[in-house]
Length: 369
Image 1 (cartoon, helix red, strand yellow):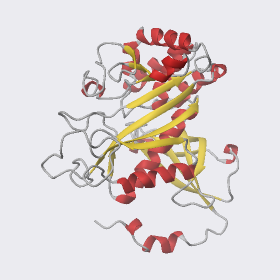
Image 2 (cartoon, rainbow, N blue to C red):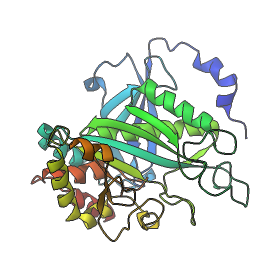
Image 3 (tube, rainbow, N blue to C red):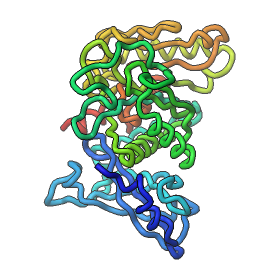
């Protein structure tokens, strides 16, 4: 298969002047946790979110509405420089709303933002470690693996260097640069334990910005991989057997945790989390039971645990945090396919306290109906 992006053909058109017009790519999350987008021509460059108008799409084609009442509205919530079209062109992240003025049932950002706003003074920082696996788009097999076979066992691939240890580094480098260009707070990348599995980290981000930036980083990854002819999966256990699964480890701290004496507040948070283990697991991704087995650097899904420098615990306290007495903790339970709004929302709800008109557990039940 030939991809136009790899030739000079497309560049002939991409270099054409836009004569003062700007392209805004409106991006949203569909009913399956996938990403959709479509382009809109604007008359001038955007300098403020308020300049971006509401738009709509056919929700019956994305599982977000019925055919007899199919209009779903896109409300811009953030915008970023477009690394694909460049210039004044932008990527626009949107929330989905129904025609009656209620948030679409797959719009988890709305409830999450209520919690982030209510607890803004706590200054909750998040950092998400997004693991993902690359697949061959033709047969869906792990990218770069011998057809019908397996590479050498796990061991040399984590942060690996060299042929036979690294798969599709060109895709990963392109994604890294695209995120930096777009202004996403990407803080690093690395090869993961299973070959053709990678990770990027986003954060620290304050409040609702964490979910926004992870979704944008995912969009950029999908677009980059599309151009290289590689498929990305966020499935938490893309291959059965003695291979690591994929998670989205969630690093959390409040302002009190980040200052001397903060260990007390970290321990308080862990105690609260221990009492809502099942509620959190329900929002921590689909098929997560295939990953949280107690093996391959995971805790058992059935039991809550915490420990210092323990990658087999539900919650890990970094050894440096224990040594200084303040910092952050890492929740290792979330799967790679989480909705970050659900995860960061319930984290704030549990650690900082619920508010009367927001309940992240309700969000999960609403979507399941």
